[in-house]
Length: 265
Image (cartoon, rainbow, N blue to C red):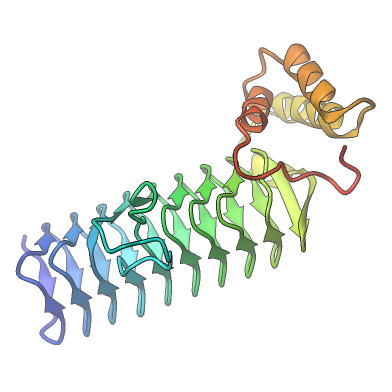
């Protein structure tokens, strides 16, 4: 089974198209693009640069990927986009490749859903099963963990980390790192608790959720400094995988501070 290319589309002869690829009307596919099996470009999609898209992905009208990053330090060197399998990119999604001033690659995992008008800037790292709602703007060098959900019109500052299973409320402005399983709201965003609804929907054990809640209270609401409470949390929950994921996330703090509750230490 070969690829289908609508006669109104332009596909460079050097582009690599696997079996089952469907390219609808008025698309442009550049020479270094690689599309795996059953990738579907609905119509009016623009793919450029060293862009590789995994099998069974769907790209809707006016999706743009692979054009030069909006990084003034980028000098035009070789950069790339790597996308996993079964992800969906709705109308007007824009994804930039890496920058030659950094790690050179933008990476998206499997089973992600980027909704209308969302943007992922240069060198973003997005895990698996991430949902990016309408109009979300994600700055450069942002890392997003598995199963995170970003609410509509939220914005994420460059170099920010968002942990796995975190929830970002609609129109939140995120300028600090969001812990795994955390829920943040507001402008500027603050930590509003755990993403308990998301954990329940994904079948997390009730006891594990209860332990997470207890650890959260210890970490963010008890007496003492935040550093002291972090040590206490690690000591009391050293054998609890989910809690220790939060602890290790905080210890790995890099460019941004940790997003805290309004009453945080």
